[in-house]
Amino acid sequence: MSGERHIAPAAAWVAAFVVCIFGDAMLGRWVLTPLFVAAFYGGMIVIDLLTYPMLSFWRGWLRRRGLLAWYLVEVVGLWGGTTLVLFLLSPVWLGWNWGGALPLRVLGGVVLVLSVAVGAWACARMGWARLLFAGALFPPGAGAEENRVPQRLVVEGPYRYVRNPLYVTDFSLIVGTALLCGSWALVLLAALYLLQLVLQLPLEERELRQRFGEPYRRYCRLVPRFVPKLRPVRQRDLDV
Image 1 (tube, rainbow, N blue to C red):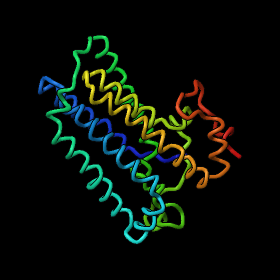
Image 2 (spheres, helix red, strand yellow; image 1 turned 180 degrees about the vertical axis):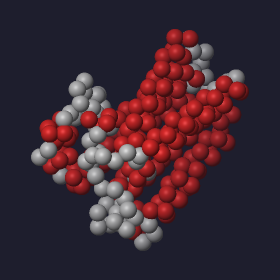
Image 3 (cartoon, one colour; image 1 turned 90 degrees about the vertical axis):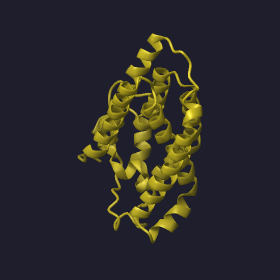
Image 4 (cartoon, rainbow, N blue to C red; image 1 turned 30 degrees about the horizontal axis):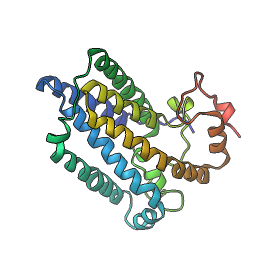
């Protein structure tokens, strides 16, 4: 339950926003940042909706093909296809903007920066395997060992305050970017992301209960799903 740090995904996450915001500053308008947010989370919505409802199918299909096959399907196929569609349609949806007041833009910028920072913290504790759904698709006895997919319940860092820090920061990041860029398209994306969570979370939590049993149930009793605790849960409180 402790000890692992994954610097690469956290650094990549921060670097993506630094590059996009710097590029938009050079262009003099918001293009790269809203495009990146829409492509990343649009792809995530597609992947989520096609992963958890079809776990049995994917586990059987991938058991013989391995982790690389899933990354090709996910990153190249689902994420890449979604990004391509949004890029081709970008001349239309990038124009769905309102003239946001300066206080709203400042608020959006602050929310965006905080969301990226906390999201990077969560990424550093979770790592690539969980972020790309490998943990769910390759459980013990179904490909985890041969694909070296870690199987652990993460209760460190931001996960001591809230069970789903990435989902919380994902939603706030989309909203923050929408306010910063004055984008109705990103407001719509935030609503779709919430709807996707409503469908996904029951399936995900059922999977985690089956996987980790009483330790996860105790974690759920002590740590809220979305609203962070003011004081982090202690490790000794989680020990069963």
